[in-house]
Length: 495
Image 1 (cartoon, rainbow, N blue to C red):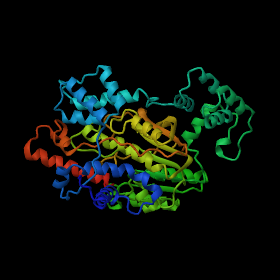
Image 2 (image 1 turned 60 degrees about the vertical axis):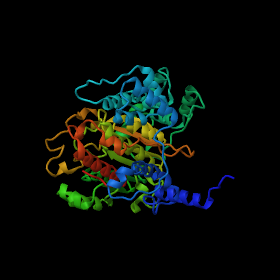
Image 3 (image 1 turned 90 degrees about the horizontal axis):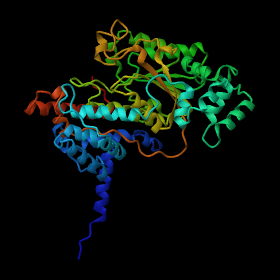
């Protein structure tokens, strides 16, 4: 006779697993907002699964549900590639490959790519991660300037014959086509409808009816002619200078919507870095802006400041996002770069609950950035139904004149706008990636994330801060990095 399992005990195990997954971070989050933080919970669970690392950081090991880092088909392809490249023991390279989708692994296999084992500057894992990023970016519209018509054509995969038809349209007709095209009607038919339609004079977007279409749409994005009645939010504004710029802009235009300014750091840390911060906050409040500190833009739903603000934001801004520098590593290094990609994925997923349909989201970044790559921004937005509508050169944006900062402890003694510059980023490559929220009404699958490294992977890293290290010093550094990653996944900034 086969002994039956105790169903009550099994249920207790499942309850314990669910509690481990969800019991800390989602406290106080309403049921309809759980999806907004699902990705951050999964990230923490993946990191805390590593028993050795969890124990060494002072925690207790609990029974946890196993989360597969990749499926059997993906694992078979990973093993095949590592064997093919003679890199079966390269733990960091395995980490890079395990984070890929099956079609990416198959494309990598058939491409004939082979990492250079003798490269003097970068490891095989680093080179492979860069190669994969390049593969993905070839499937985007690119990171440079992109006008509204080019973005529209790329989104709908329209051929070049449609370009002359669209570029001759006036503002009224082009906006009609851009907002109503869904593939159900051919473009010439919709264009004729646009020509026959009456202008919509109930909103700012209905102005300048006969102006050249593409130019007029671009002017709206450059002059920041957003919904005057909707609230706007600024995330990750270290010294609040951009939020102040926006508040002044909205006041000058007679807008009644609020400006909600947020920082990731506490007010105490901001006072250490920016002597002018209290004065800036005072001016913001005179402009009826709200200022909130210690707000993690990937976990908006856990912040009480955003309670009851669902579907209220008409414009959202995040300038030059960055997950934080890690000493000894370049931003593109695979041991730390997953944080930058997840930052964008979780940011756009968190926004879904708070941006109103038709609301605009703008993310400024350098098209050559190797931390938050432009493809992370564009692809993360698309995954969450934020349609890419234009890429505006940053220096053409009416709000570009504000006090840029590094957003870390370097701001205490130097700033980018005080004779200092970013080492590898040219100002003429700074872009404003512009998106419009167009929810389909369908439930999206849980947010996919880029896999974090295991403790074993961190400890085995051959380069960066680990170069030349061995024994206990290597293990201690791995513990420090692991602990930092855990803190960051909890919304605590380090650096």
